[in-house]
Length: 280
Image 1 (tube, rainbow, N blue to C red):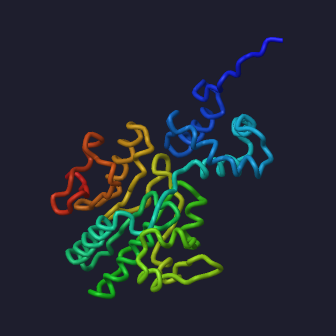
Image 2: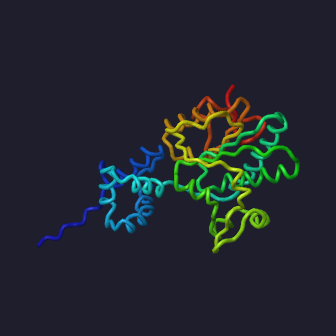
């Protein structure tokens, strides 16, 4: 008998399980997983394979193509989203956001300042902002800004609303003083105080496909979301965000993101270094 050499699986061939799963993510969120990151797919979906008693990714892909199990499809999409986050991520940027919000409140004292955390993951960014705004109000008086937080993942929003974090998560970026002031322990986890959580309105929202929130915002944070979009969708999202920001308002992107060469709807802010303002 002649032994045949094992042929490696071509993950990039049209119709492969990896291509089917990647296409599902892009169709539902606009986010892409390139072939060089296909290794993430099998790793991220292993818990689902185990829970469903499925032996291979091909079997899971067949169930996805059937399109009848919406709970499964939502769970697959949630598992593939990059929900990497931490408290006070890029702390200097958040401090600048708080300063900008304070300036806006001082310049228009009769108007509520509105802030939107778009792509809030499991809630560390909006909670960090809520802490900063609360400390600011306690120190100087004035009104607390309205704070909206959205994410494409329903599971992420559910976790954000619960505001429950592991010891590992709570230690990432959160100073001990703030941890003790704003969080309580419960069964080994840390849970944000209800007073803090109540300052934030949470909702699921797809920046690519859903209607944007009603009204204009003074400042929008959309950090490390555009990285995973195609250039066409990146421009589309930036142009949509521009319509949601009032004249004089600001956009905050991640450290590796820029509006330059992406859209004409924004320009670098001359007042707040690293932030962007709507083009008049």
